[in-house]
Amino acid sequence: MGVAHPFFQGENTSDTVRTSLDLFQNPKNHPDAVGTILTYSGSRTGYTPASLSQAETASKFMDYISDVSRFPGFLLEHSSRERFELNEVNINLIANRIKEAYEGYLKIDINQVISSIQGLVNAVMSESQQNAYKSLFDQSPVVNVDGTLVIFINYVTLNMTKTQSGKTTVKTQTYEMQFARFSLNRGFIIANAQKLADALGDGGLDNWLNQGTSPQKKGVKTCFSNN
Image (cartoon, rainbow, N blue to C red):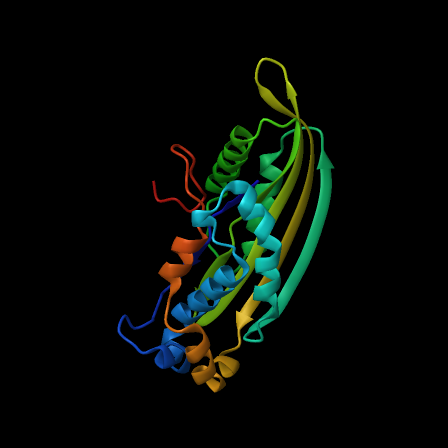
């Protein structure tokens, strides 16, 4: 099972009226250029959570992040992986790890992160009747930090074993957390603007968000919901 909720934080300086060449050639438009690149990777690999089931979202995610990671216009700055096992639900531990990964780049409310993860866990659990299953949570943001565009690929996979005792509870959990941070290589984008425009066309952050966000169940909020 998989649930995705990407987001953008910071100022989108992109012109609303521009050509596809301007999108890549003019640094002002690079926030939307990043969105266009990510949308293209999603379409090429079939990772379009807005139109997929949770099972399909999870199955296509690794192809998507591999495609994004290979794009020469994204420079890898940091990558880490962590794995641990628990015998009880510990949402706070995951939330703190996520908060640490965003430190210095994003401003987030830790209580909202905790609420978000709990909601996502509940959403996945409600979808499955299995006693043991794997779920994936993708909340990978793009951030404009004082003119530097930063792309995160952050996700958590959770292997759960459930036990029935009047209500569904979690018996064992194994977490795998992967964090990667890229910056936009503006020189590459500008030097290859015509090729990128011809291959990718025009798009933007809105297209990426619309394509990459899983349908949200009533009452389930993400840590970046406004209400």
